[in-house]
Image (cartoon, helix red, strand yellow):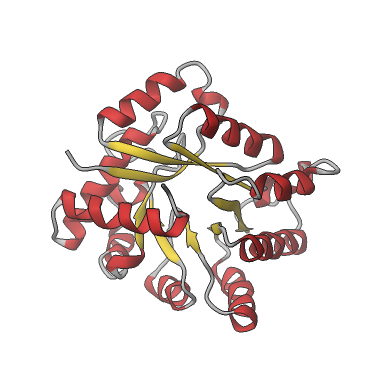
Length: 259
C-alpha cells in the first residue's frame, strides 16, 4: 500500500463534525498517513490547531481565506499571527485571490494576501495559496514579492490553471498541488500540466470536503480519496502509484517540514 499525504483538507468543517474519527480511520486504512488541516478563518484556524493536538498525524495551517476577510472580527489577524507562531503550525493560509466570488473587495484581498505572504516569510512557514480566476493578479503580487525578497516558500493549492501559469509559479520557488479535479473527464489540459511539473515540486490533496474525484463527484470528499488523484497522476506521468506516493510525500514533508 502506498503511503500518501493529503496536503490540503478542511477537517474542521461542520460536514465532518458527526464522524471525523471514522473519516480519519478510513484515511489511514487507505494509506493516507498524514494530513494538513487548513484554516480559513481565525476560529477555523484555532480548530485546526486543536485537531492537531488531538491527532498527531494532522498538521495545521492558519489563515483567513480571501472570501472570509469581510467577516473577520477585530483582533482576528492578531489571533492568526499568534497561532502561526505555534510549533505545531506548518503553514500560513489559506490565503490568495478570488475573482469568481465577490464577497471581498479585490483591493482588500490583495492587502491580506500580501499580509499572509509577509507573515510566512517572517516565520519561515509555507504559504498555502488559493487562486480562482485571478491568475494575472496572483502572478503580479507574487512577482513583486519575489523580486523584493527572493524565492517564495509555498504551494499553489488545488491547481487548475494552464502550463504558463504553473511555470511562472515554479520559477518563483512554489510547489504545485493537484486535487480531485485532475480525475475529471474534461480535465485533459490540467493533466497535461501535471505531466510537466518537476518531480520535486508536485503534491496531491483533496480539498475535503470539496472537489470529490471521479467517480465520487457529488459526494462529500474526504482524505482517503486522495488515492484517486494520486492514481490519476501516476497514469499521467507513466509511473507507479508507489512512485507518486514517495515523491509527493517527500515534497510535502520538505515544504511543510513535517515530522
